[in-house]
Each structure stands twice: as C-alpha cells, then as structure tokens.
Length: 187
Image 1 (tube, helix red, strand yellow):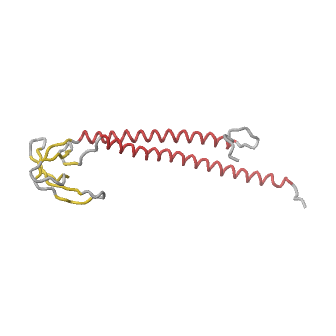
Image 2 (tube, rainbow, N blue to C red):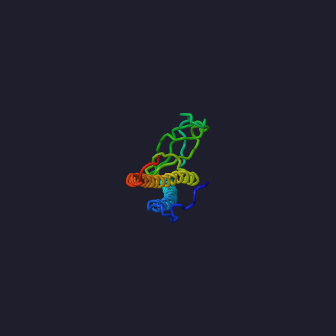
Image 3 (cartoon, rainbow, N blue to C red):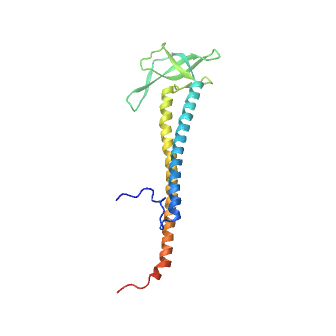
C-alpha cells in the first residue's frame, strides 16, 4: 500500500506535535530551496554577464603588424595548435609597441592581424563574445542554483533528522515509563 498523502497534517490521536512541525518545515524548506535556487541562478547569470560586458568595455582591438612568422608554441587538448608571433602596433600615445600575440598559423612577417589591448595598453586575450558570456553565465547559474537549492534541502534534512531523533528519544522515555504498568506476562 502506498503511503497516505498529507499524513502529517491529518488529525489523529497518535500524531505528535513534532509531525505537524515537520510537515510545515518540509513545505517551507522546499519553497525556500526553489526560491534560493532561482535567486542564486539568476544572480550568477547576471553577475557573469556584467563581468564579461565590463571585460569587453575595458578592451579594444587594434591592428598590428607581424614582425616575424607565426611559430607553433604548444598543442592543445582538442588537437589544434597554438601559434604566437611578435607583433608591432601603434599605442594610443603614438609610440610603437611590441609584444607576443596569438595569431593564425598561416601568418607571415609583414601581414596584419588584430590584437586586443586593455586600458593600459597591454596585450590581453580576446574578450568573450556576448554568446560565450551568455553560455558561461547559464552554466555557472545552473551550478549556483543547484548548490543553493541543495544546501537548503540538506539543511532541512538535518533539522528533520533531529526531529526524528527527538521523537525516538520521547518514545523511549514513554516506553520506559509505561512498560512496567502493563503488568505480568502470561504463562
């Protein structure tokens, strides 16, 4: 036979007050878990997107000229190669700047490429696109939602376990008190 629905809330002379407390606790924990998960997820998505928007705002692209041919530096896990070359570009103050940048494998000395600079004129990696930022925000948001909701559910389970232990202690105390009153055994 399947369990009786809402048994903790039904009137019953054997129902203890702790069952009613536990029923309301479980309801509150589930509601709080859903709200915490949704809040943490949305907050994380918005925070990641704001961070990536700030990165894009702080970086700007400039045209640079390769001083040397592209050279393979390391292989990556997906099998593609990473190529770098020394590039030269004109800084905001009009001076020439030189640095090592990531370039296409077919880049030769004298060809042009785009590099990204921060507000201080240092070479930085390409900023994530809006789509990449959205995806990263969603993935981190799901993890944050799962963590927040799981933490609330785990806390609720701990309180529920404590209520159960307290009920068992009460049962033991009552059996110790009532057991001897039942009289003698038959036979």
